[in-house]
Image (cartoon, rainbow over all chains, first blue to last red; front, side):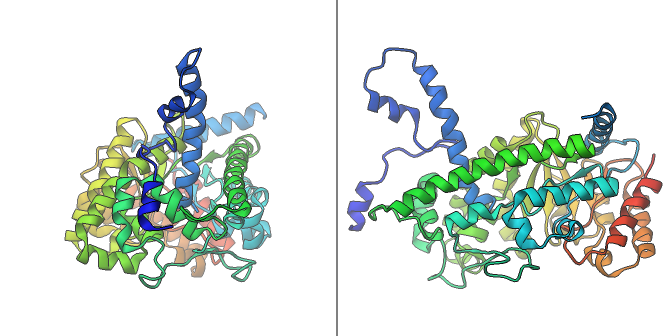
Amino acid sequence: MSESQAHDKRIKYRPKPGVLIPFEEKLKEYGSITGDADIIRKAWEDIETYATRFVWMCLTDI
Amino acid sequence: MTQAMEELYQERLARYVTAMQNKKPDRVPLRIFAAEFANKYYGINNQEAIQDYNKAFAAVRKCAQDFGWDSVMTNMVAVWAGIVNQLGLEYYQIPGIHLPVELGHQYVEPPDEEGAYMKADEYDLLIESPTEYLASIWIPRVARPIQAFGEPTTYESNMTWLKGGIGMVMYDTAWGKANELLRKECGCVPAIAGILKAPFDILADKLRGFRQVCIDVRRRPDKVQKACEALMPHMLQNALFTADPDKQLPVTVWLHRGTYFSEEMYERFFWPTFKAIIEELWKQSFQTLWYGEGNWGRWLKYTAQLPEGSIIYHVDQENIFEAHEVLGEKFCISGGIPNDLLAMGTPDEVKAYCKKVIDGVAKDGGYIMDASAIIQSDAKVENIKAMTDFTLEYGGY
């Protein structure tokens, strides 16, 4: 894959601390939802924070 | 858990926390970072300790029980090689695989630009999106089975991501249980909760390597500075996520490279982002255990800028009496008992040194007894006993 092709495939968002994939991106994937977005957000973000820890653990702990 | 053991735990917790707040508890607390020493005392080698965390945790508990320490690091090795095995980390040397079983694990630094885990022309990628950079480029580069961004994914690559994450969850869960056992079986307090590294140390330790970062501070100083600034909020987040929810135990920062630089370099690259993290942690009521490895005495005037009570200053090779003179009004001091004395001295020499330190820095409280550096397998059992017993006898207020 060329550098420009690789660059095009980069994610368009820049994950903030504690986030791998922002919930807003997941909402776009759903389109419309029938219930409370905040309930889904909590379930999503609880894993996000711990999963982000794994990525950074490789740098800080091991 | 018996009531007596819980009472002992609460007594030790109060002692430890009071000292960390730079106040005077009933006695100088003993907070011991027993690393390879615990393995040797328990009767296991370093391969067993690093591959089997239950044995490593049990080794520390045995020390806590037999010596009667107030606080101890739950597992000084702090790494379970199960995770490292799965990730196939290039920079890791493991006893029993790469190294003799009696040696501790080692980190391999890249010798040159070609071997650097982060390339010189990747600074902008790191600065722009640090998490993405780590996940897409750095981890695939250092973890052998994981495919790089843009390359076709493989079964092995996908499974390595999965198993690495599972390994982290397993180890975190086991650590929590080990802390409970320390409390229930030994009445002993876990010494720390939470991990922090200075942004500059991250660049030097795991990304560019020390040799390359020495070149970078000359050839691309703006990039180095911006990289430290980009890493800072992520280091803070990592520390907060792993911190003690009760805000009693300190986050620990393991400090490595700042001792090698000029004041100009320290002031520009190391200090600003590191200071900002400690200050923000303190705003949120988390203390930081400043565990500087080596001699950080040159930088006492910078350390003194930190908010009162925000750190516990651990002494390794600098002069503890000078450190106390500069920092003692504001911060608790710990450590300062030389590891070579614990390895090569006599019990009487150890006791005499402990007396000198307690007399010199502990009389107003705010001192915690510990060795200067993590205690390895060369320390004599009788000397560790001497340090412990003397503190128990002489360290009362």
